[in-house]
Image (cartoon, rainbow, N blue to C red; front, top):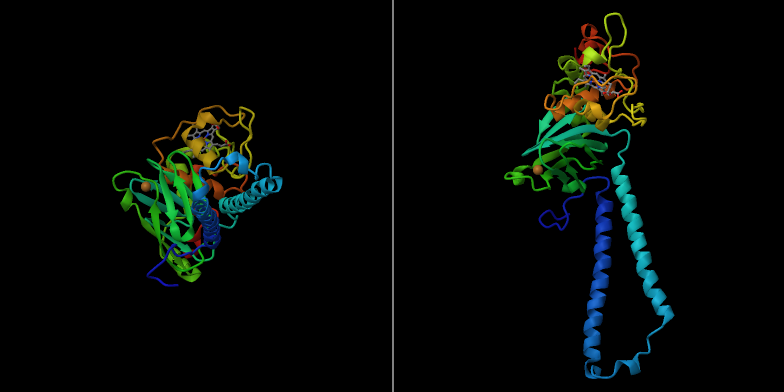
Length: 338
Ligand code: HEC
Ligand SMILES: [Cu+2]
């Protein structure tokens, strides 16, 4: 395609083509109707200019023409229903990430994007991803509302303080694409830009292994110790669980709460459990957990969440503080490297 002139940005994700087709269809339909109506106005104005003073009632022969009434009510209805169905279908597909998506966390703040990969590496204003794999972003802001926007992927989603938002896409072309903040967020909003670097799977694997970090889950495990969570959530010396519920095997399951509800444990549940423990008390436990608001930042909470997710299939209490080392951790790549 001609690089020097484009009406639309490059299309580099799986859904980009269909998003373009839908918006061009809408534009086409709107153009046909607007042009048709404008031409009819001009045509009738000219055609009937000389009869403008004639008494209308005499010539009003169109009134009560049922065929026409039904025609111009049903045709637009059908067109609108097709647009509605297509748009809704695409929207729903765009909002349901495939289960095998690569997990990436995004923490926005004035004025930068902090990106975290499940396998450990963190980057700022840059996102490295492999081509041909769906990527799911879990995003949160440290201050005001931002919006994560990658025009080449045709995706944009607000990044909110105090609440996770998610988004997914599947890049289809190797290359470097613009990342913008699409929500005015203060003085340097215009500088809150970055790059999405889509690599071949081999290049991406090489990039990941060149990064040499703990995985997010490993960092999360460390935080459970350094923040004192294991005091209550680990196992005591005599093997009895302590006064907090075990964090093993809870991710993705339902937990019974004191108020009778049974929410599913997801990232948002864990975040609330850490920041507002009194808001959702596990049935059968006392409300002794202190809030960690202001003590753990959003990235640390995401790391802890990654750890709890990594032990989603485990049973029993967390290993006690004395017994843990990184070697005991599930799927730790540093073991292979050693
Ligand atoms: C003083 C003891 C104590 C400490 C310290 C503590 N917790 Fe808790 N935690 C509890 C108790 C008791 C509950 C159950 C009651 C409730 O839900 O508030 C709980 C509940 C939770 C839950 C919800 C689990 C469920 O089954 O509903 C999570 C997640 C959690 N804690 C994570 C943490 C993390 C992460 C830390 C450290 C940053 C931590 N806790 C520190 C006592 C503690
Ligand atoms: Cu911003």
